[in-house]
Image (cartoon, rainbow over all chains, first blue to last red):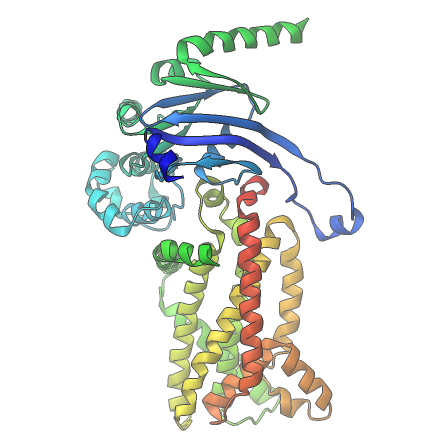
Length: 256
Length: 262
């Protein structure tokens, strides 16, 4: 084991034969159990055996049509879902799924929410304290920092939320659709910050997006999945044209 | 089990912080603020003492304290059970966006309830002083009884929390169950003396219903300077620990599927 990991020091994420099925835990009521005793449980195979590796510092884009399992994969890597089969190895890196306003309590002030959200993302109180000023400066919402979050406008809310996730950095970042929030000025600022975060040499990033331009602009490599199956993985210039062609074909076969 | 301990170590700070945050937000915009934590239990105690002491002519010794002890223990148990059923669904945002061991949510909730229980206990001490209840060393035995109560309700809470995810109407069922336990626990009457004519029922109630048993033992040590039944207390402790182990196991096995359901 040890030998293996030292040899592959530069690998940040290893996904092996990943299977995920949605099943078993289906919403039900007591009456339904009574009437449907013994009926078979539906299964939905979201990911069917996907394997890949991401090198440290690389930016991977995941593409595929709607419902092909992209978000499921991100959540699995983030540890929100457990794989039904296969394994995900993060080689000891810290990870976060970039999502906005996790665990916010709207009755508390912005400052308190920084701690709440930060601790939830796995940071210690001291680490957050160190970064607190930076977050406050980046969010740039002035005196509202000491007011309850429920008094915020939706723009201020997303500014604060973005600042927390952007400043509290992890080794691996997972991004489900590139975010740009707030007013025009903050949008630019957040997009630039995002780019800065993504292009950091030590950070491994996985981006899921429908916007091929974003992928082309930001990513080094692309993983293409279709209906839970692995299609291709490789440099952006190679995979994206093939994907485009595939989607065109789909359109024509559907319409004819 | 090892995973459980590691997770607790890793997340207990978050649990405490989020419990504090919740308590703070609970009183943030009410006029009397944290005073409600004291006013509410006091008023309930007065109501029950009036109804069952005066209207139903109960002449238990130290009746107000008697009711208050029962009420405090009951409220804690009741909150734990009701709170856990919908816990995952109420935290949908959290559960679908980050990984957190799900019992940490319950742990955090339980801290807020423990805090309220603490306030109740303080009020209770004042009340006992007021009623000239003699203070003795036996009273310290209330602590292990509370511990057993906590472990039992935490274990039961974890299991209910799991089934609450998939069973929509579990809340209705637990409500009925809790109401039944409420009336069968002797919050405002002494099971032993009230049901004198049905001694079998008394032993059954006190043996099968942990809340009734723990409540009556709490009163024994706090009011009447009597020792609790250590054997039965021990049995409930073991059952509570078993429930916790089952709960932890069930949650570890299923928690990563919750996000797919809610």
